[in-house]
View 1 (cartoon, one colour):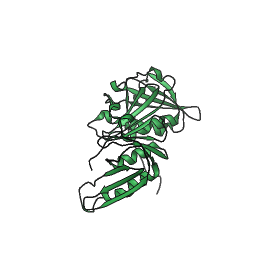
View 2: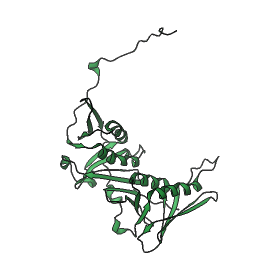
View 3: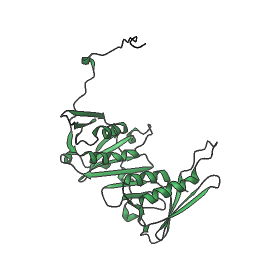
View 4: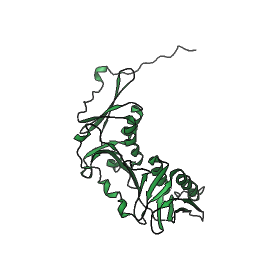
Length: 285
């Protein structure tokens, strides 16, 4: 029968609810698409709790751009938008940790709360605040503490275009599909506790990119796709295919520009310059 349940719950008085300090600092209005674009680099943030300063997105000014950067030590993303009105108050010294580290959970919550609403963004000394206006005239307020620590001088990791041997223009969809097909050779063997390999070899040569993968038990896969290659000679390098796939996905472009290096990190950008750059560290294959 229904109606025979009884409950007694412990409650708190409204006056006992914790209060939150007002966030004072640099404030500016930002479009939802711009905020989502900036925070998208959070996909590259570290999950290693021993390096807390990497467990978030580094928001900072870079010249006339408002940028976010994130890295886990193996890959890096930097995304920028034109500096909004009011952002000129931010200090332009990112390599001296002039910025704020927004925790990954805060990034996720901001994206979910803002949605399609224009918002007011306030960056304080130890907290960040986002305020959005609702359709009924009310507002929703989200606050998050910042990660206390100095972000590393990440720009030193980004290779300069002029120092690389050549650039390849690659169809993004074909590249991602080829990565996934070739990675089949790296799949784990049933019953094996050993973590499967995730590294593939890329060879750029005469407008053709060849992808090669070799497993631990003789498996192999190879595929070629057409590209535009500006290098004067063939170049071979190796990378974790999952990192390359993630960078290609975040580029959100039908064509990507890829600057490889035989012994160093590669640089990936969308088809057109739009203040986005992705870096993947090399692997020995």
